[in-house]
Image (cartoon, rainbow, N blue to C red; front, top):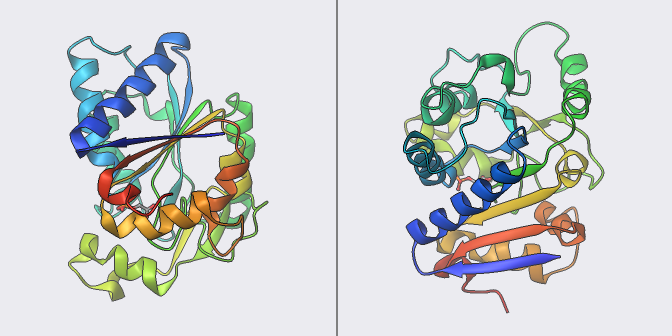
Amino acid sequence: MMHLEVFRTVPEATHRMADLLAAQLEERPGSVLGLATGATPIPVYREIVARVKAGRMNDWSRVTTFNLDEYVGLSGEDPHSFTAFMRLHLFEPLHLAPERTFMPPATGEELEKRVRAYDEQIHVAGGIDWQLLGIGRNGHIGFNEPGTPLDSPTHITDLTESTRVANASWFGDDAGQVPRQAVTMGLATIMRSGTIVLAAFGGNKAAALRRAFAGEITPALPASILQRHPHVFVIADEQAAALLP
Ligand code: PGA
């Protein structure tokens, strides 16, 4: 079941997303949250931090988080890593305990084995209650690129050229600097989440959003698998929603 909500502006959409999360934490202060990186979540995290600091949202002391993805080879010390992104935008402002904030393993020995263990860690934590997602212009969710099997677990993936170009702005506008591989929660991992909140802002997401929710379910457009999920909120601005029927 998909609930589509379209907002005139990004701040209005961001408020709605924070409201949805506040309700989740009200009901379950010890929620397990799935978190995303990229440009889309930044205003959402800013709003969450402001609300928690003002006492307008439950504090996160009992929350556990699992992030969607990380670049292979970047340690948490690298400012381009998603680990650094999360520390900057959310974990440090909310003073989250490191043992409650999980990032996919992306460096070090026996990487494949530790990547495979990520889904088990999520399971042991109780499973993801509430998952925040963006969507790529090519229809990826996490880094599940077009062609990823719909039943994939957390895995190492090659990034497409289009994704490396789309993310070049984080690497001095040089797509050549964007890592070639990433670790991502799989589509099966994402589909086990209780509630999914997918945000799409801007006209460059319109075609992907249309194919995801008004097209066929196909590995060619990984987000289309969400049509099979019972509880998805799609929060879009007018530009991103422009091509939806
Ligand atoms: P963005 O990335 O929020 O930076 O547009 C979304 C995504 O690629 O999933």
